[in-house]
Amino acid sequence: MLLEIEVVNSLLQLVKNLLQQPFESMIYQTKSFSPGEYIIREGELGNGFYILDEGELEVTRNEKVLNEINLQGAMFGELSDLLNHKRDASIRAKTSAVVKFFDMGLQEFVVKNPKFAVKIIRNLGRRLCWMNEMAIRGNTRNDYLRSVEPIAEDGNLELVPRLLVVDDKKMIFDQLKDCIADTGWEALGALDAEEALDICESESFSAIVISCSLPDDSAIDLRRKLKTNPLSSRTPVVGMLVKIDDSALKTAADAGFSHFIYKPIVKNAALTTLYQVLELDPSDQYFQVVKGSLLFSVPAELTTSLVDEIKSSFRARIRDTINDGVNKVIIDVSKLEEVGEDSVELVGDFAEEIEGMGNPFDIAFISQGEDSDMWKNLDGCEEAEVFDTLKDAVSGQSE
Image (cartoon, rainbow, N blue to C red; front, side, top):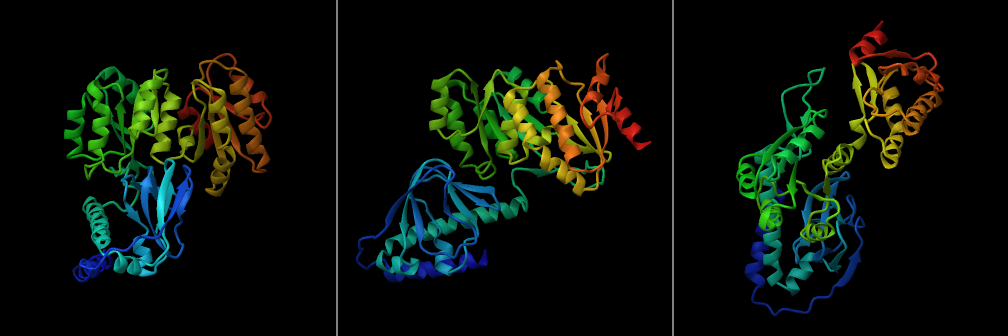
């Protein structure tokens, strides 16, 4: 921060000396970027700077989104150019974007165009305000999450996501709260935009879910105001609307909403969206370590896309489990509404993946009913035991 203050002071002196000099034509290149395409990469040596012409950008570090740039005329990349430092963050296009790239040195640019020194100082001033805000809030990790009392078995602090749900129908809030019931996350409801703004004056959240059907376009106005509030300016905002309402979807997308939960609310789909927004691994919904065993909870309802999503995480989960010294697996199929081809294939592929790792895993199932023993017919599960509850399975594997 002290370094940036020195830069601001230096530029203030430049302004005093240069504001009366004639303005010269600017030489720049116009560059277009597609969503996800990088403009600046972390670790590169600063060479030139940029001005946003159209679109929205994301500032990332170690693949984590730190901030957004969405104001036309916003300057970025100037500090590393000025100090001849490596870029300390990456910047990529969030939407289709157009920028002006100035490949001359910043000092040369300011000498030729002194009126832009004021713009640079304002830009650095905003950054100083952001850093001050972060210091006040004490955020040293992902500022989308907040610390709570120790709840982990080893007594370490865990970070628990906290959601604000804004909908004028309490039933919708209750449905969404039911969706996250098994995650340990917290949720608070607001019935209108005014109540939501009042709450956000004193509380911070991991994500804010706003119903796009709030009266009088107040959802769009609420999103705009939240982005000007220091406590919510970088909080991800999720739109919630009826899936078949294409007009509402377009209006919301044009207003800046980039993630959506659709009504009627489907638990797995809603959770996947929230996990993505919170930059958490969506497969955490289905895998966790409990009492020294990897618990794989098979969802109640399975779709083709969900099966593919879960399968894609198998190898990494099993690898991490082995790396952590865990050699016991519990597969909970008790929530399945119907045992069909998809569920049998999913569990079978998981068992095969375990077997393919070449490690002897102690496998147990949680299942009730007459067909419970059928799971033992799967390859690699012949020696598995079947229990009625998680408590029984954990106890049985400990013996």
